[in-house]
Image (tube, rainbow, N blue to C red):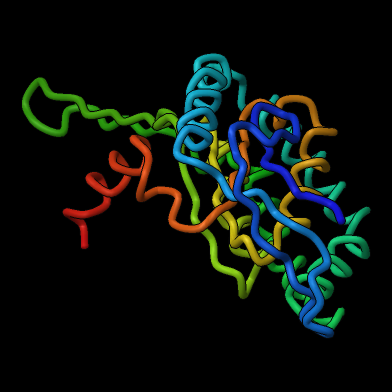
Length: 225
């Protein structure tokens, strides 16, 4: 029986994980594979890798980022059948519903292909006596996404293409119920030069509760509730 690993710094890896969880076939209830469950150190490793990648990715040109998004979009089209079958096998959706989810997620990738328009700054001359006003947009750093099981490709595609296209790096924690799909998408992304160093995938249950990265995330998120 296969074991599904994490995806850190462009490669599949077990990192420091020792615990595993079953991945069930929704049609039969049978266990079809095992998935590694991340430890606290694995999360910190992924965040550190994304942080290091950010140093160079943040200064990459908009042309380079958009070219990568165009390539990623084409791969999603080429592998739509494979992705739809994985959604059906792991989630239980019928193929047509799975295709619809892929299309809706791909629309965000297509938006990211033209991200340059959204990143334009502005300048206002003499808004007050001797005062000009301008603004410009800069990358934030390492972004994170924690996504549910019910839309396993659409919701992640709402997140990381925009984050990456705007010069950030990304760590994704998907549902452990559908790990093969995320591995497949990560492998597609690695085909496109650049994506492999800016997007990491970790799997597990409540892993943010036990790591320093998770503590920082909760402190940042908490006051906004």
